[in-house]
Length: 366
Image (cartoon, rainbow, N blue to C red; front, side, top):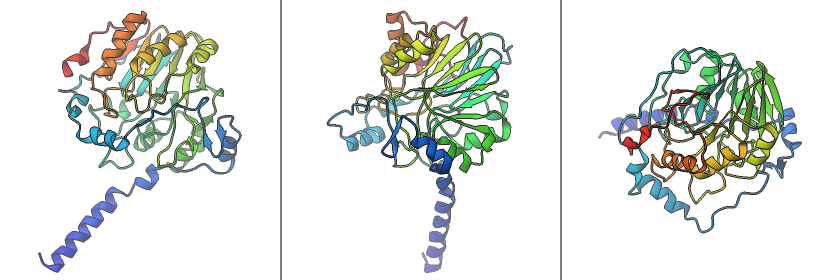
């Protein structure tokens, strides 16, 4: 290759790399300053420059993280961590809004319809959950519906700022297609402001604080997790959500390890008609930040939830367990504990008062 051709090739490669990385600085978000940072410093959850859990998580000892990374990328069971065929998707139907309904779109994204209002939880529609769309965990199924096809919602709640729960591209689309406010934990408003979300549409809450929207009371409640879109951790808060209407109420866990805070939430805000609870992406290496399926069932019991709808599984490969394992284990444990359970296909709208029987639809894809 001539020097000129080599120079052209290197120039094109550099330009391509720059183009691929052009959005990364914005994806990383922004640190809070001014009044927003002052609110963070005054939070009971904030100390020594970071947010903290109510009790420090117990870290697993003797974990070889290099081995975990190798296993994730090259391990013998990596084929088991993906479905063996297409995941069945359901196109939501335009049913009447009476009653209480939950539509799960995959991973942690869901729509809650109660008392005539609609709340969208942790919407993520991007192909990858990563600051760069050429790398990082990729979808195992397409979104069952386009963002533009969503109904007009009354509130958008975010649990924390990890990429699989707070997606910049989705936020930008929702700013354009929706008018609802974003309810977020402390600190995340700075990310949204950088992404040009109007200030009037940002509501930041600390644990125990609430906002009244469209006849609903949305309360930021504790969770046991961590945050961060860079190598710096815990510079924003994480939360679960209590969504309460005049007659019905739903709990959304976000990401969390199992802790005694769920019993306290159940005592203060329960009983719940339904609970959307994280059951996937668990591992012995991080036992206190993601629940196992059995702990998810225990959480439903603590919350006094009439129906458990498991989330945070099936859509992204984020841990070492087989793809079908979370659903298999939560089904088995729910039967053992006599907990009512619905495991919908992505896009399926669940009538909480008449939930579909669990049919094991995922088991043929193991």
